[in-house]
Length: 241
Image 1 (cartoon, rainbow, N blue to C red):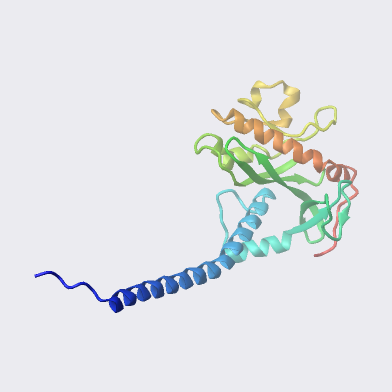
Image 2: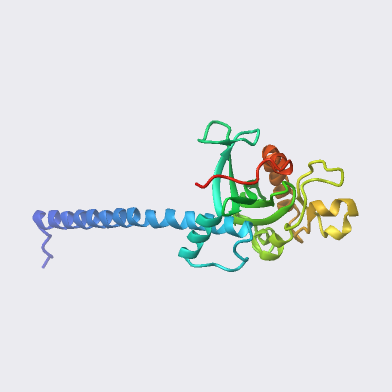
């Protein structure tokens, strides 16, 4: 005895049910994505603030304060500004303007932070490089995004590597701009006159060091007018935000 085939209405009901389930699921997914987007953007901004604080030595490497503490430190000590190619502070973002951050105590500028966006071996390296208010001495460095190989080039995000930047100079012994770079090996192997402008390289990551050095130098050249302004002591205080 042959099985009876499902009638046409049954098939239509199955299709309707499948469509209804798909529609409800799509609404739930869309709603969840929309609701999470706000939190994702907040987390991105919080991570940015944390890395700026690390570069300015306001948060110790390896330490992650609460969200409230990060926001409090950022609002108290960091000021985002926009400058032109001559280092002049602008009221608004225009064409070729550059983004810059002051870190300060009350209205006294203790130093400034530059965003680093460099080529790496496998992708972009993004971070922040901070300077004392003398316009030449590095006070801190942090990396918040990269695609380098873990255990090799990925060591650029480690505390030991980033701490090596502190105290390095972007001017050589003749007070000429040379940037700060990553050595091929140990700084101790370089001529004594060059050691103040380099940090120890990462074993097995020569290309990462090369590309990051190039990216830092390119960025510093863009911001050299800002550094000169600080060297000449023409910018020591700023208005509140």
